Image (cartoon, rainbow, N blue to C red; front, side, top):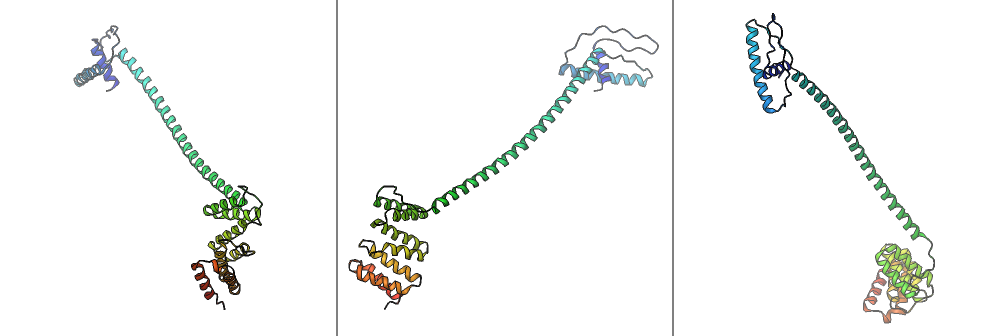
Amino acid sequence: MSVAATAIGLCVIGGTSAIAQNRGAPVAQPVIPAVEWDKRRLDQLDRNVRRLERALTQRNAAGQPVIVEPDPEVIALQGQVSLMERRLADLEATFRRVNAENERMTFDLDEATRNNADLVRRVDALEDRIKTLQEEAELNAPITANSPTGDAAGDLQAAMRLSGQDTRRGMRALETVTVTWPDTPQAKEAYSRLGDIHVAGRDNASAVSAYAQALTGWPRTPWAAETVLKLAEALRATDRQTQACGALNEFTRRYAEAATAQQKTRATQLRTRAECS
């Protein structure tokens, strides 16, 4: 709806006659009270304006032009609309600025989250590396005398349990037993256990050395006969057939009488494989 049309409608509703012929003087308008505009009034105004537009069109067509004076209410309303439009434009600009700022902050937050995740990964990797280096340093440190339980048998049992959980730490614990209690049966058994670990790791050369240490003096212990057979197998695996046959001869001379039937059968099989005379 045009401003001119609105002005015409307001003039009519106010009951004034702002229309004068070109030859006459304008008629003074009375003071019009402020109108509370709502949907009903605006709809009525729109209908009145449409009627006035049709009437003006007919008068203009008949050669009777009219002069319309602006209504103060319309001017005031127009000013209020202009003010509201400016405020709305300001709000829209503020909204766009805030929205842009939110987008920037969201981007920065995403970037910070990515950077934080990368830092966490790097820290975790460094911690794992430090832990590995500490473990390597601990496992490669020189073996020194140390008794966790204060007893040779207790230390051996603890080392055997550890070897079942962590091979490298278990080996170190067994080696510690041999250093801490060198002249005890527990030290010899620790060497025998070390030989078993070397065989499991396919290191037969180290197994030969460990078994030989365990059998120094040919101990009379329950595990000795089995250890002699393991020594013979490790010697044959390292192509030392003559020494393997010598170990089997010691088995026959020192341990065969108390050996189990299974151990005696193994000794016979080993003799055949080592081509003992």
